[in-house]
Length: 231
Image (cartoon, rainbow, N blue to C red):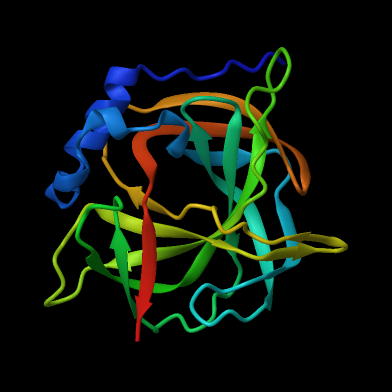
């Protein structure tokens, strides 16, 4: 099966970035925008063979390592520049489902922080590659992310940020991935659109090769400067 790579028009990506929310007013200089630091979200409609596997994940809030069962893939973050992707797996039976935490994020180094209310870890993003004709494009990422949902709460300013993706330690059998100090966090910005396009993709990640039926959207995962949990 021939896998077609999705190319994104730079003007379209800049439009998404600028149009998301007034929360990002201080980060709207398009000259700063690095396209390798943005992913387009792709929903997985079906998987030829779903994975259910136990791994050990770190936690950015308390620093502890815990055994987790990953199920999926359920979602992809597709790089707008190369064939890298983030492969999303749901976490079976997330812990502390009613807990809420406050976190400050800085969109850029110069911006003022915004405060978000987040829940427990619900998804893990593993680094992967989209299989296509020709040699791989771009350096392969080695960073694993935990994904937390962002909730609206009284007294906290509303924003277009729907999830936050934070780098964590990952262990699977004898493999260990520790995020480097330069690993960047991301926010998940939802820009809904009723115009969806379906496609088939083959990807490879730590669990092997997957054949997916996908549905693209105009949601994006955008890099941020830094974050800090508020006690």
